[in-house]
Length: 209
Image (cartoon, rainbow, N blue to C red):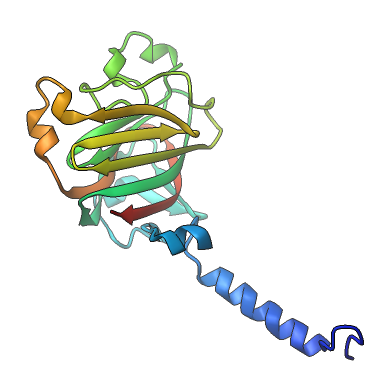
């Protein structure tokens, strides 16, 4: 039966609804239409470790989430290498959780900063720090069990880390004494460096610059 005001039949409405639903189903996990238009692509399909290499036994896909197994982990890398990029993702820690993002062969810390066992670390070992190179501003992660957003932007020797919409690292590595070699690195896979605790990741997307 047609809608007299719009002229749209129920059949037309159902067909259009089906097209919209199909389009949404084809959109990779965590990737909005706006981000796709900006050039972001998903690097995790939510169902498998296709496109990843390394410690594939230490991680598992669970209901759209990439999980670093407790008593598992290790180094998991993308098959593809990246030069300049913006990497966006979400993460959730268990109490005492510890992992890291591999960027050009170096680690950016993922950590439950407030765990008692982490009370005496160096400033450059807390969450978001370029590990043992550049300390991050603290106090911007959510408690264990809650999802956090993070963005890592690398362009040349300029690295910036944003957590929950707060910039916690913004540095040109050429200005950091002793980090000349790291500043010269221009390319490498992305990845995670698990340390034996359960850490969950979702909505992994990258834009190459």
